[in-house]
Length: 458
Image (cartoon, rainbow, N blue to C red):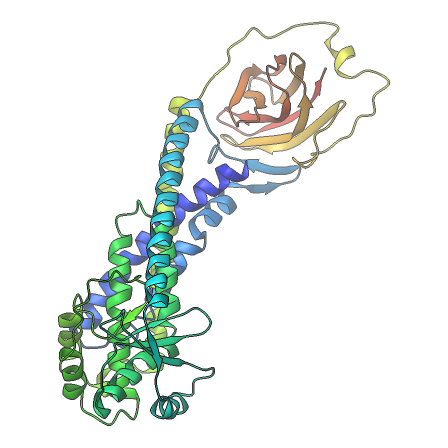
């Protein structure tokens, strides 16, 4: 399979798997939020992102489709392309790439514009005594810089390796400054900025997945709730939860400046009401303990993986039906030439038995033999290079008698050209474009067969 074809299916199947994981996360989140068990809601979003990143469904389909045998690998029709599948794939891939490039360019332009506004605005360094005390309490490593800037009207955290907390330019009371520092430093400690960056990156890639907007909103809202919960129940924050939210209410953002979604915001209006409702009547002692939380995480992973595998089986069944209904069959008269064996196995050539890797096309004659090719399975015997207007000759002998196979070549653009044979057959495939051609045999009988044969280009 070409790397571009492989990458297409990895992204497509990752999009399906991530959507499945997000759906189960939504179910789990609803139950946990209703019972005020909030501690593990946000960390479980990391599982959802993992299903978008790692090719779980693709690996499962590759392993379950490619079954090792005595003489190589048996391949099904999954990921093979008929002309119809190829055309549809090109259209989808084209739209996908154009959309991804457009979204990347749009976001990069807006982000650079935001950075330029910050750089042009006057900024001031803030005293760091209170910040250092909180950092020590939270056990954080590394330095965090504090600035005031005229470009923002709500405290935000920005930065990649070097984190910066940027405040609006004005005077701050001690309670307000302490509250903001606790919230934003907990953001940094819990790596919420990194989670948002991953979410943004996934949104730019899987822009056509309708669940991505919901995932970004969930990451944004539950990241803020996770910080609220941690500050009010896990730290030495010197004020009450009511005072904590009063500080936030007093300065809800009024800015019309576009800010990248990967920055945090203590006073974001879009999710503030939900944050208060979720934290209302929350009690730390009623939340999941570590063992309960880990059990829930493992259970969510198991359910997502199982459902992903089941969805993979459904995808394979649907793909097989599309492939069978759109495949190209070449029904040509089989060449019966008494001199064929002389041309196919000239005396001066050395015959190499067994399967060669696909990356090493043969230049002379090649033979293959396989025992027990199961019904419906496909066997790739090897790869041969042929120039334009050359022929690839293939012969097969089938046992037991009366069984049928189809055999032929897979072109460089992964189209199948084949003929049928009962008992035995030989055929010359004329090549219209130079390249590497894979030789395959597929058992279309109802029972298992044994095969031996050979192929050559001339």
